[in-house]
Image 1 (cartoon, rainbow, N blue to C red):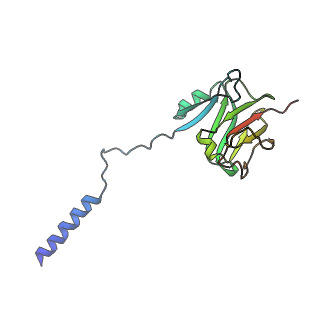
Image 2 (cartoon, helix red, strand yellow):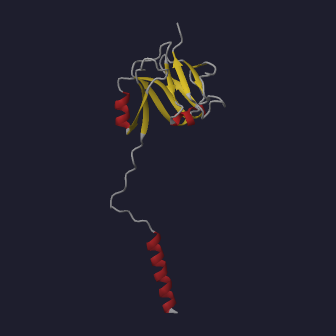
Image 3 (tube, helix red, strand yellow):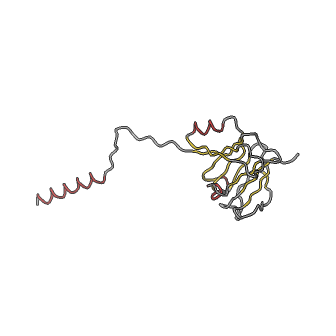
Length: 166
């Protein structure tokens, strides 16, 4: 009887030791810093339709440094009504004019997940195109877009933003 109790206790202690997670250090582990990404719209090359985008990712300091001295053009959102993950696009050469910026998202992450967006500054008008071949921009939208619509949801090839002509 006593031998059975000892076996039970030994098994309990062994199982507890095997399935208990012990920290490797005496200090508590700090949470990893959140990684954020922004896009920088660079000067377009002559003869190209799309505005080159450079992605900058890192901690808050890295992203703030990349955005400094640039103009916030728009914010992209993963879900309708400005929900989910987001990413900002900054312009290297100021806010929108009537010619604006054309972004090619056909091979980028945001082309597969974009559902809503906000425009900033003078960037007020926008048009979307799906990833289907050929440029077939949809209707012109004004201001923030709470939902891109079923045809464009998670299916954006190009996005053109611009200022309203005066």
